[in-house]
Image: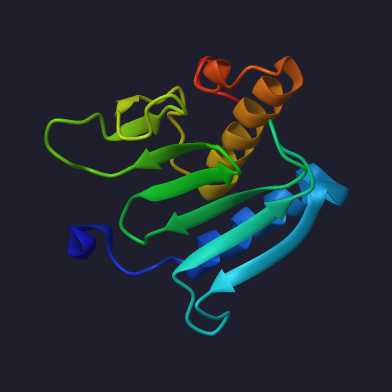
Length: 143
Protein backbone atom coordinates (compact mmCIF):
# COMPACT_ATOMS: atom_id res chain seq x y z
CA UNK A 1 0.00 0.00 0.00
CA UNK A 2 2.84 2.46 0.74
CA UNK A 3 4.07 2.11 -2.86
CA UNK A 4 0.64 3.23 -4.10
CA UNK A 5 0.74 6.35 -1.92
CA UNK A 6 4.27 7.29 -2.88
CA UNK A 7 6.82 8.90 -0.59
CA UNK A 8 6.00 11.47 2.08
CA UNK A 9 5.08 14.83 0.55
CA UNK A 10 7.33 17.37 2.26
CA UNK A 11 5.67 20.35 0.56
CA UNK A 12 2.25 19.20 1.77
CA UNK A 13 3.49 18.86 5.36
CA UNK A 14 4.93 22.40 5.25
CA UNK A 15 1.61 23.70 3.84
CA UNK A 16 -0.29 21.91 6.62
CA UNK A 17 1.99 23.45 9.24
CA UNK A 18 1.38 26.90 7.75
CA UNK A 19 -2.40 26.50 7.86
CA UNK A 20 -2.32 25.36 11.50
CA UNK A 21 -0.12 28.32 12.44
CA UNK A 22 -2.12 30.87 10.42
CA UNK A 23 -5.58 29.65 11.40
CA UNK A 24 -4.97 28.77 15.05
CA UNK A 25 -2.34 31.42 15.77
CA UNK A 26 -1.47 31.29 19.49
CA UNK A 27 -2.97 27.83 20.08
CA UNK A 28 -0.02 26.11 18.35
CA UNK A 29 2.47 25.44 21.15
CA UNK A 30 4.83 23.06 19.36
CA UNK A 31 5.55 21.70 15.89
CA UNK A 32 7.80 18.74 15.30
CA UNK A 33 8.81 16.82 12.19
CA UNK A 34 9.34 13.15 13.04
CA UNK A 35 11.90 11.64 12.90
CA UNK A 36 13.57 14.87 11.69
CA UNK A 37 12.97 17.96 9.59
CA UNK A 38 15.49 16.66 7.06
CA UNK A 39 13.66 13.41 6.39
CA UNK A 40 10.14 13.73 7.86
CA UNK A 41 7.57 10.98 7.97
CA UNK A 42 5.07 12.83 10.12
CA UNK A 43 4.22 16.34 11.28
CA UNK A 44 3.15 16.67 14.92
CA UNK A 45 1.24 19.81 15.87
CA UNK A 46 0.56 20.38 19.59
CA UNK A 47 -2.25 22.75 20.54
CA UNK A 48 -2.97 24.50 23.85
CA UNK A 49 -6.52 23.20 24.26
CA UNK A 50 -8.54 20.03 23.91
CA UNK A 51 -11.88 18.47 24.74
CA UNK A 52 -10.83 17.04 28.10
CA UNK A 53 -7.23 18.22 28.47
CA UNK A 54 -5.16 21.38 28.37
CA UNK A 55 -3.29 20.14 25.30
CA UNK A 56 -3.91 17.95 22.29
CA UNK A 57 -1.94 16.87 19.26
CA UNK A 58 -2.55 16.29 15.57
CA UNK A 59 -0.17 13.82 13.91
CA UNK A 60 -0.31 14.44 10.17
CA UNK A 61 0.99 12.46 7.22
CA UNK A 62 0.69 13.25 3.48
CA UNK A 63 1.91 11.19 0.54
CA UNK A 64 2.81 12.35 -2.98
CA UNK A 65 0.46 10.11 -5.01
CA UNK A 66 -2.58 10.28 -2.78
CA UNK A 67 -3.52 9.96 0.82
CA UNK A 68 -3.33 11.64 4.18
CA UNK A 69 -3.83 10.99 7.86
CA UNK A 70 -4.84 13.51 10.55
CA UNK A 71 -4.73 11.63 13.84
CA UNK A 72 -5.92 13.57 16.88
CA UNK A 73 -5.06 12.57 20.41
CA UNK A 74 -5.35 13.84 23.92
CA UNK A 75 -5.51 12.10 27.28
CA UNK A 76 -8.51 9.77 26.75
CA UNK A 77 -9.75 10.78 23.31
CA UNK A 78 -8.65 10.11 19.76
CA UNK A 79 -10.10 10.28 16.25
CA UNK A 80 -8.75 10.36 12.72
CA UNK A 81 -9.60 11.74 9.30
CA UNK A 82 -7.89 9.83 6.51
CA UNK A 83 -7.68 9.15 2.81
CA UNK A 84 -6.32 5.87 1.57
CA UNK A 85 -7.46 3.45 -1.06
CA UNK A 86 -8.28 0.14 0.61
CA UNK A 87 -10.86 -2.49 -0.19
CA UNK A 88 -13.92 -2.66 2.07
CA UNK A 89 -13.55 0.90 3.42
CA UNK A 90 -14.47 4.36 2.10
CA UNK A 91 -11.39 6.00 0.53
CA UNK A 92 -11.97 9.18 2.52
CA UNK A 93 -12.90 8.03 5.97
CA UNK A 94 -13.30 9.03 9.59
CA UNK A 95 -12.40 6.99 12.66
CA UNK A 96 -14.79 8.23 15.39
CA UNK A 97 -13.72 8.81 18.99
CA UNK A 98 -16.16 6.24 20.33
CA UNK A 99 -14.64 3.52 18.10
CA UNK A 100 -11.29 4.50 16.50
CA UNK A 101 -11.11 1.17 14.65
CA UNK A 102 -14.32 1.94 12.70
CA UNK A 103 -14.15 3.43 9.17
CA UNK A 104 -17.02 5.82 8.43
CA UNK A 105 -17.42 7.94 5.31
CA UNK A 106 -15.64 11.26 5.90
CA UNK A 107 -17.42 14.59 5.56
CA UNK A 108 -14.22 15.94 3.93
CA UNK A 109 -14.10 15.58 0.15
CA UNK A 110 -11.10 17.85 -0.54
CA UNK A 111 -7.72 16.51 -1.62
CA UNK A 112 -5.53 19.63 -1.38
CA UNK A 113 -3.43 19.93 1.80
CA UNK A 114 -4.55 23.47 2.62
CA UNK A 115 -8.27 22.75 2.16
CA UNK A 116 -8.15 19.44 4.00
CA UNK A 117 -6.34 21.09 6.91
CA UNK A 118 -8.90 23.91 7.03
CA UNK A 119 -11.69 21.30 6.99
CA UNK A 120 -10.11 19.26 9.80
CA UNK A 121 -9.63 22.41 11.88
CA UNK A 122 -13.25 23.48 11.25
CA UNK A 123 -14.62 20.07 12.28
CA UNK A 124 -12.44 20.00 15.39
CA UNK A 125 -13.08 23.60 16.42
CA UNK A 126 -16.86 23.42 16.00
CA UNK A 127 -17.02 20.17 18.00
CA UNK A 128 -14.72 21.67 20.64
CA UNK A 129 -16.91 24.76 20.98
CA UNK A 130 -19.99 22.54 21.27
CA UNK A 131 -18.19 20.34 23.79
CA UNK A 132 -19.32 17.34 21.78
CA UNK A 133 -16.79 15.12 19.95
CA UNK A 134 -19.66 13.12 18.42
CA UNK A 135 -20.23 16.05 16.00
CA UNK A 136 -16.69 15.94 14.52
CA UNK A 137 -17.78 14.40 11.21
CA UNK A 138 -21.08 16.27 11.00
CA UNK A 139 -20.32 18.93 8.39
CA UNK A 140 -20.94 18.74 4.67
CA UNK A 141 -17.59 19.13 2.88
CA UNK A 142 -16.15 21.86 5.11
CA UNK A 143 -14.69 24.46 5.35
